[in-house]
Structures are given as C-alpha cells and as structure tokens.
Image 1 (cartoon, rainbow, N blue to C red):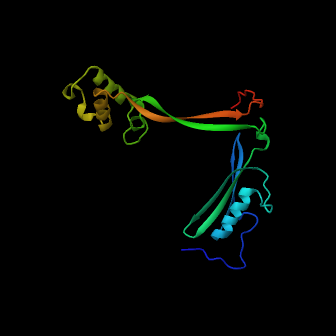
Image 2 (tube, rainbow, N blue to C red):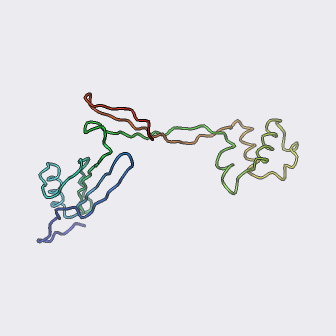
Image 3 (cartoon, rainbow, N blue to C red):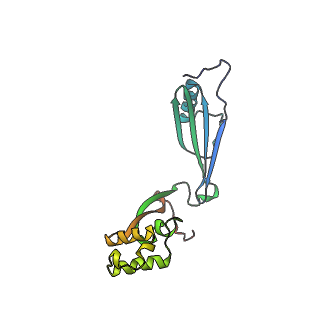
Length: 192
C-alpha cells in the first residue's frame, strides 16, 4: 500500500504532532513529528538535517532527527532538549544517566512466594516450625502435626534441606555523572 499525494497538499511548516516529556533535574524533551508522502517527508528531513528549515523555530538543542518509511507511510521526527535553569553547569557540561541491574542475594524465607503471595504466604510460626524441623533434621514421620503443614511449609522445608537458602532478585542502581570539557567548572552537590 502506498500513500497518495494530492497536488494541492504539502507538509505543514509546524509539526502537527508534538510530544513533550519532562524529567525532574534534567529538563524537558520535545519531539515534533511530520507524516505524509515519502518525498515530502524526506525533503523535510533533509531541510532539518542541513539547518535550512527556517519555517520552524527551534528554541532548544536538537538531540536527534529520524526519518522512517514503512508500507508507503513516512514520518520525520525531530527531538529537542531544553534544560532551562536546570543546566547550571554551562553549555559544555552534560548530565549522563546510567541504569545498572545488579543481583541481590536474599534469604529464601523472605521470597515473595513465602512472604507476600496470599495463597502461599507463611506466618512467622509456620516458618519457625519449618526451621526447627530442618535444624533437627527431622524426617516427615518425626515432625509433629506433619499432616497439618501447608504445601508452602513443605516446599520451604524441601528447599532448605536441599541447600537452597537464598534466591537472587534484580535491583537497579541509577548513576548520574557530569561530563564536560577540560575548561568546564563542576562543583559537587549533595542534594537529592
């Protein structure tokens, strides 16, 4: 399927689709998008890329320009970044954010399956009974009230008897760094 261009139709000067996103301590990012016939959109992309498009005012820093064409439909997306008063470090210093995933080792008894899930949640007394049976290495026949134990208690006992005492959970660490040229002045701030 291809798009059909009408002879009296052209791309508007201002983007018909505008999306703004604000992030605290970083600033605002704006995305402007034009859609239309492939040649018109490609021409708009080339004008924006070369900076020759004077019909649209850019009051921010251009951080990206994308042209996409799929199944006869084309679009051009321009991304602008605005930092307003948040850029207290100057033009040559940028804030870089990195998100790291780390594995955290947690005690098996605190796993959500045993501590928060309504159907399988164990009480403190039930966990204590399991721990006592495991520490004494009791057989099923030696455990008092074995028939009254819940499936969760039996499962926790099985895991502990087979050496599974912990589990991994993924946590995330956000690291913010300031990157600048050698002539930039960066001062430490201990505000969150």
